[in-house]
Amino acid sequence: YPLYFNGGDIRYILDEKSTYLTVERVNDNVQALDVPETITIGAKTLPVTNITERAFANCKKLKSVSIPRSVKVIAEQAFANCSSLDSIGVDVANPDFLSVDGVLYNFAAVSSTIVNCFPPAKAGSYTIPAHTKAIGGSAFMNCAKLTELDIPSNVDSITANAFVNCESITKLSYNTAYIGTLFSGKKKLATLIVGDLVENVAENAFSGCTGL
Image 1 (cartoon, rainbow, N blue to C red):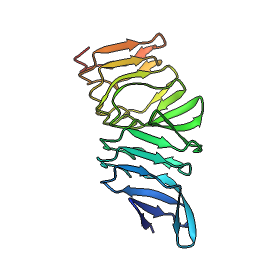
Image 2 (image 1 turned 90 degrees about the vertical axis):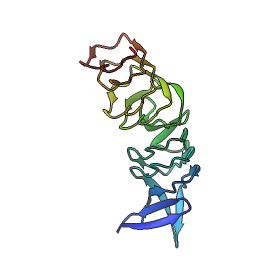
Image 3 (image 1 turned 60 degrees about the horizontal axis):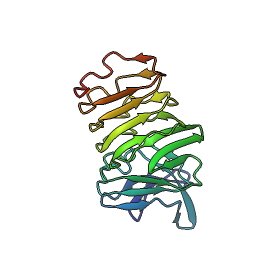
Image 4 (image 1 turned 60 degrees about the vertical axis):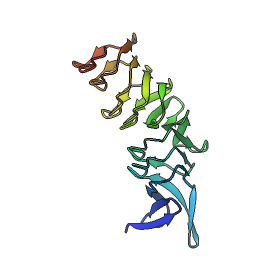
């Protein structure tokens, strides 16, 4: 163990009890991919339930991916450095994940979702939906084409590395109780809109933001 299985453009890991499959690695040259819900190995048909950390990493030609209803776990940085990726779709029957305008969310309840991955090639402005409660680790990492971002008041948790290498942000609207140093060093940031719910701003929150 581990036992590997190759199927099309995906390499899978078979669990020790042979009950489910994990997406371990994807072909670097794939441009669009529908992750299958099940795979048949011999006499067994097994569900695809997990996607490992960096499973799609550096698939620079990948433009779109679709997640089936069977997937329950998508690790942080699963889509790291997928510089052409602009849409992540999710089967509407999936109880654990949700796609909103091509952006991947962890789904807990209608009023409590978490940004899992903003596709790196998605360009322009983005308003995080009001029902969002948190922004997960590496969620916006390397999103070089994101220029404007609106973070609503419902967001009460933002992981420290959520916005690494988002160097094109020029406008930020922020309306959470606390503003940390997540956006320090963003040299192109020129417009900052602070909402009336902001209570505390960290020291050096916008240090290095020379455009402000």
